[in-house]
Image (cartoon, rainbow, N blue to C red; front, side):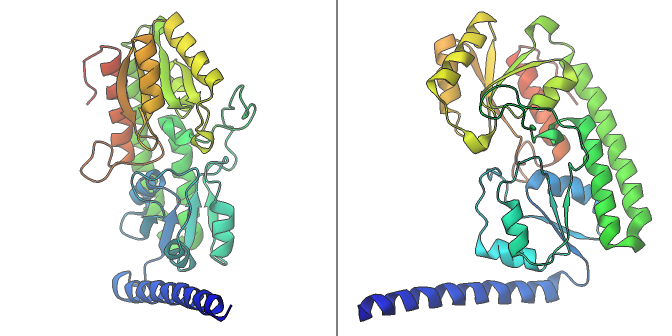
Length: 312
């Protein structure tokens, strides 16, 4: 009994020392490296990239999750919580994307948080257990991303009103880039005949892109929070691909492609590769920024449908 008590005490002591160490290191980094600039945390890397385009070098913008992380069911670490406790603002997507965010931000203390999709009218998930719930992947539409930019600028102004004109100027500049991107993607995807525009992926994360550019979307599961391939879902997707002679199927970078490879094998379609959706790639990858992410995905689509003209 005494031995068990001693082991438990030692275990708790080690955890406490680890948390103290994390906090001390962050305090040192905050004092020495971050100067007096406000610190903004985003829940995932895509939001961080968009936010940096608006903040310029006036703020320190960091993502809680790293490139490649699966955002839906992410489990924050003690060091994440320590970082959040020093933040001046936390930006999250909302629409049920970050299932962990509410408890996380509450545990971080009195840190302002801004939900970037508040007030947006989302697309709804049809059928399945998520029937009628919002599809959270609104950033996958360059048009919807304009809404994110405006909300990020508002959030930055709320913590740094002196920088208002800088944020608004940066936001206007980045919105111009998004508008150009929208035109670019629309022109590129218009090369695919309308009767062939069925976009098949693992997760139903491309609903907004499909809605913008005239595609029908099909998938193995609605959101990665419930990424289970039931026989019924598999059978349904196989039937869609076979009946419509869909030439290519895709998956996403943060989940296993094995179920989709099986769909490709059975239907004799091609596996076209992995989209970046919930995460950017690392800095040397094909989707190290949000704009690059969108272009990478469209290039995969064009290649999969044997449209080899590349977007710029």
